[in-house]
Length: 284
Image 1 (tube, rainbow, N blue to C red):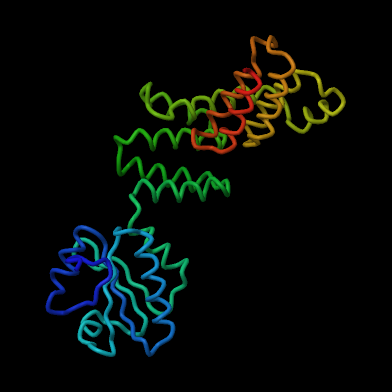
Image 2: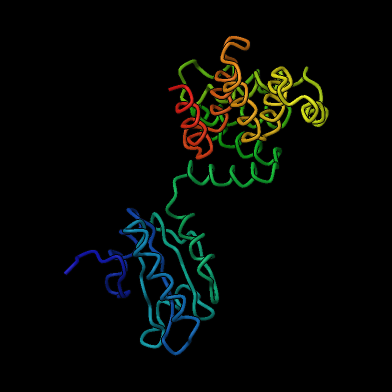
């Protein structure tokens, strides 16, 4: 029998060991429930599913109020189901009433993810919605909390370029030591942003391309303007066209531009992986 089960019945006599001491290792979610209340049973089932999926990243303590109400009264539980989360010996979260699977998963993610993971998730949401001010605010707070974390500076510089603050991005990039992982991303984005600033308006270039689609100068301008505006796949298509049409054009600028755009996408990007394969297959 497991001496430290992931799901356990709360015993008041061993609460100090089972909950308080254990919470210094992993968060402990306490569920006050009873099988006489259907939403409480649903919440229990959902939490038991999550605790299995998260494989020991949190523990689930169950208190059946039909058997013992002492702990519920002590923790001022008002209704059923009710959740209390204990971490580092303290109650850090509570939820009252029925909770859907999404809300419970969000709670568990918050408890089990590292602060860096949480920040990256928040950042991704703001970048997706192009809420650059909120993204900058999150990163500035992160840097205040961890001034030695250069990874946050990389993301800060990258967001500043996307926001259009090229001067600010240039200042931040200058503080990031050479050799820092991913430093090339904001640096490349900054260079592309600066280059795009002198290339005109994308819509006008696209109109010109409709009448002169084989014009490689126009293709290059379109690639840079698309990349600067976040249209990475269209940018890669233009650069791929240059690569396939004329390897000699501006010292193989089609290939070099594809590499730059893939740097903006990051090493885990599916789009970057797909175009990298296409580029490799064409060249070999």
